Amino acid sequence: MKAGSNLEKILTAGHFAVTAELGPPKGPDVGVIQKKAEFLRGVVDAVNVTDNQTAIVRMSSIATCAIVKQLGLEPVMQMVCRDRNRIAMQSDIFGAVALGIKNILCLTGDHHTFGNQVNAKNVHDLDSIQLINMVRTMREEGTLLGGEDKIEGEVKMFIGGAANPFADPFEFRAIRVAKKVEAGVDFIQTQCIYDMDRFKEWMKMIRDLGVHEKIHILAGVTPLKSAGMARYMAKNVSGIIIPEAIIDRMAKAQKGAEEGIKICIEQIQELREIEGVHGIHIMAIEWEHMVRRIVEEAGLLPRPILS
Amino acid sequence: MIKAEQKPLEEIMKYLEPYKKILLLGCGACVTVCHSGGEKEVLLLAEAIRIARQETNNPIEITEHTPPRQCEPEFAIQVGEFINGAEAILSLSCGVGVQTLSRYFNIPVLPGVNTVFMGETVAHGLWEERCQACGNCILEKTGGICPIARCAKQLLNGPCGGSSRGKCEIKRETDCAWQLIYDRLKALGQLERLKQIIPAKNWGQESRDKGPRKIVREDLQI
Image (cartoon, rainbow over all chains, first blue to last red; front, side):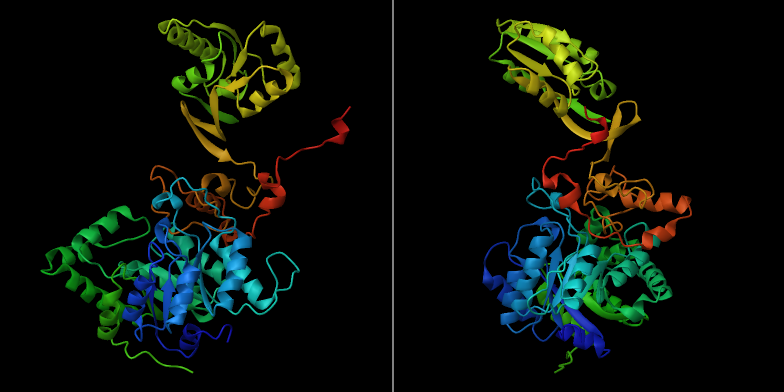
């Protein structure tokens, strides 16, 4: 075991993993975390805590993870390169390990101009691949980045990264994952999948590179709430492709939200059949209370309990 | 070359409020090429300032001059001949020229342009940023296209998830630097290069983060 986290145990044992996202509150209100955590308790193997996603200021990922951990759930701490340099990142990683956090998801981060602090100076001292490599160095060499300085204690982190099969240039997307593997990633979670054909094509490229045998891939899904949401995402969010057929289905449905859940469950079932997909990552944006139903109806409950 | 844009006239007029006599200085180098601070712009700006001040019955005397460069001491010193009692210098050079003049003259040197970037002329009337002077050029690795100057996140190992149909998600009219790099390396038959991990950059040693940089050439020093 590299870190001994529940997520690592689940994946290593060959179970089909289930994780879900938990967005921290836009302030210090612990009640929001408690509420969201209860929706996810017993439903997922780990809870992925976002790090100021879309550059909207929220409670820090590390503090939210610590609270999630106190509540008895396993956190995956997201860390973006946008807001911290390598000094702050390494320092926060020490703190996270000390607080019992065993999974880290290393991300570039949404551009700050999408958020509510558009006049900030972004950092990007490291990119996500360099961050992955730094965490691996900390874990395996026991040293800081580029230095001989020995770390006091062990940095046991199960290291994750992201992949977006729907961004361009498409031919480079699998190569980029291979670079993350070389840098030291243990698992990858993808952007939300709607275009199943393109995802399958990407997975073939992943298999051709042998990546699926070296690391674990969690396929990302986001249930659609309405046809309007589908249209908005398809038009305005770069790197998300929603086929017309899905938008049509949402538009024709009597109850959009119900249809969105149904589509999501069908997607999970289809994704389970793809060679190399080792789990599912559910990003139910401000819809955490729907995760239990999705996981249950997808036939993924109860979650395995491993010692 | 350095690219600059003239500051709004209202801002310049505020700077000039305390003065009755100024020297308006253009620069014959970069700002002439990008039409923000050459001889022509000096002429037009001087006229605009005069008119604005006449309208408020507060005339101003302006001497106009455009040396070949403001950022070289030999040219900067010669500017002295034109000061002739001016209370301030309004400089249309980049921020470098303003600072060179400030070293030589004991009157305020005011910036008339905003220095924006180092870039190229893409078409008539269109300039784009190309270099951020990071101090350790990586263009050999990236097909001659700089992700530090041209990627909004300065990514060194490939595009983020916001690259779509060749464009950047921040500004849809901007090319994704990594799409350009991919296309270029593909055309050169060098796609293999994309597999190499570019390690964390030494910003603190090579870039401005260590404070102002200096190049010392002892062989050229007298």
